[in-house]
Length: 368
Ligand SMILES: *Cc1c(COP(=O)(O)O)cnc(C)c1O
Image 1 (cartoon, rainbow, N blue to C red):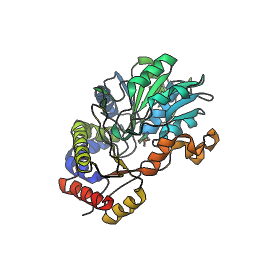
Image 2: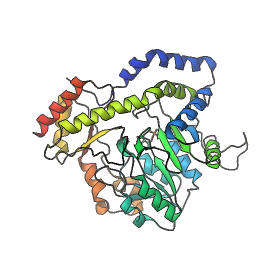
Image 3: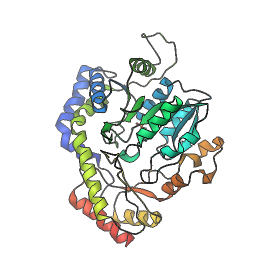
Image 4: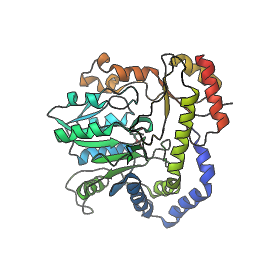
């Protein structure tokens, strides 16, 4: 039996009536960009994240870019982030003319290791940007403490962690800014690109709102140059239909993860995801294993029709585009090892017990 890595059509089949109605309703009212659904979604997501303000933008990447701008990041500044993430987490820093400063990971969680952050701080550092990879929040308390001590801003890259919790506190509620992506494969996925910035102060809210619309405030008056990063009403309408199910879907992912962790435990040479005690709600955007035999496992999974993907095959410091930052290949051993060994397997909420048993059986056969 083939098992896909992800099957978006099942969610649509489940919500077809409501989703069709919501999209057609936008086609009917015709306020396609920043229409009423965008405001409704902003209000709803602010509640989910436990913060007063939310700003809908065109993608998760734009959310990060605009949050960095709102922190005043520009040429000559440095931003500390994890060396192991989706490219956007580092790319946005370079796009602003600033320098991304990479920090190695905690091998248990693949998230930035707080113990290594202080060494990376210089007088040019403005922001620490932890990434909550695979749906588990980074260890935020020590990060917030370091930021306070050094007067730095914190931006949470929560693109993979909407609704996840750290010691009971939701993603995006701890940093000065939190950034979400509604890319279709995230736990809460739109029907295209979409993203959101969460923030705590009225001033930051106004800045981000202005930056998403060419820096205007008031309309057609510009003290600064911003972006065209407005959120489409159709995307917001789709997300509003899905949002009430987010908690249940993430719980289903977590339940699948616990079954994998039980069934795959004790297999030599296979590292399972670790759920930290501080991680009071891990939403498993990905279920990511690691093995020195990844190549062989990859080929066998493919042959058996089991979906798999490598998130991510190359850490930032080895990317060609960052060659001028002056890092050496051996600089970040733990993220390099992760990039060589990780692979993610199917964990979508609608995966059936039969499908999961098939994945488990095939994996056990391969590594036996
Ligand atoms: C998906 C993702 C982003 C970017 O989001 P887009 O909506 O695709 O622009 C940023 N950071 C991380 C960690 C992501 O997974």
